[in-house]
Image (cartoon, rainbow, N blue to C red):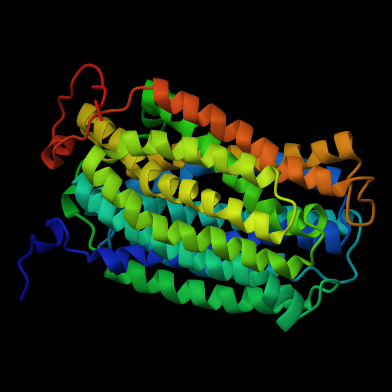
Amino acid sequence: MSRPDQADLPGRTPAWRYAIGMFGTSIPINMIKGSMILYYVDILGLDVRAYGAVMVIYAIIDALDNPLLGHLSDRTRTRYGRRRPWLLVGAPMLAACMIAFFSAPASLEGVGLLVWFAVFAILCEAFDSMLNANYGALLPELYPRERDRAVANGLRQGFQLVALVISLALTPLLTTQVFGTEETTQGFQITAIIYGAVALAVIVFMALGARERPRYSTRERPRLLPSVWSIVSNRLFWTVGLTGSCYGGAMALVLAGIQLYVRYSLGLPVVNALYLQAVVILFSVAGLAVWTRVVARHGALRAWRLSFAVLAVSFAALFFATDLVTALAAGVLVGAGWSGMLATNDLIVARVLDADAARNGEHREGLFLSAFGFFGRLNGIVTGLALTSLGVFFGYNSGDDPGADPGLAFRVYLCAYPFVLAAIGAVAARIISVPAEPPPEAAQTAEPPAEPVEDPR
């Protein structure tokens, strides 16, 4: 029989079981982000300007509801913990909304199609936020030491990349070849049902095995407005959050546009996106082991800075690709830079959470990560405005009205815009300060240093 305090011991939850949850959370949202333009704009004919407007509105709504979801999680007190109940509720709701998102009735058009798209896009993102705020909050709680976090984070990012192979690289094959065609929508619905069932099973398995730390939830429940003010007045929240959003925005553009980049810029059938995505993801998986060793030797901050630079260079190489072979070569660089960001970005954020817990004496990972999610929600605005700009500058409005040069349009969308964002992030990462890694017990103390100490690594 286990001791009562065993659940509070570090490493009680096996890293692989926590990490596999990333597989389940990644499959639905990445199918949505990777196929929504192809499904709604290019196949169903939704006007790109209406799409862009919805993306801006939904990003604003999602940015507002994220802190509320995280705060509710921090205040939750049940015998099952703070995070697990939300994971068990959010998983089936996300699966159901994803299936509905890719099941738009054939009779819908115009305003009806726009409303269907807007409602289920917002619901999918809301339930995805619910899942990720709670799942992400478990990382610093379950693994207080940065070395342990690096291992758990490396494993979960590996599972995420496996999910991406399925939800991004394999999806074009399933939707346009196995279950449907490039001109029909049936394949999207069948694929969404399969992915939803898999995601639900994996998230439930992970949530039931997570062992939360009782002492994290026995203190006084944090209040919303004072907590929000404490976070938004924290300099680290803005500097780290905005810098990380450069990476997030760049990859959001890539994930949303890669299928149309293959179709228009490379002049190939959409199914060839499978090969480009597979190369990027497979080299990202291989790179995780390398970047985890770099973190162990040189620290998360130095590795984070280097990753930004590699990512920016990779987008420049992708811009000049002229066929599948040269695109695959550039994809190797994209995978190298992406894996570095996957291995390091969450570790930098976790340091900020540690510093906040030390400063305020409260563990508010749910609210803090949801507040950081505000910057991630800017991705919706970025992708919406970037896509709208293609109509302004290149005349691409939809699959029915692609303009004179859709190839250049999606070369700019997929390569030039991400390069600018990654380059800005690389410069910012070099000049901002990040808290040094604290010892695990530091997160339990209420008296922090007056200012965060710059990490020399």
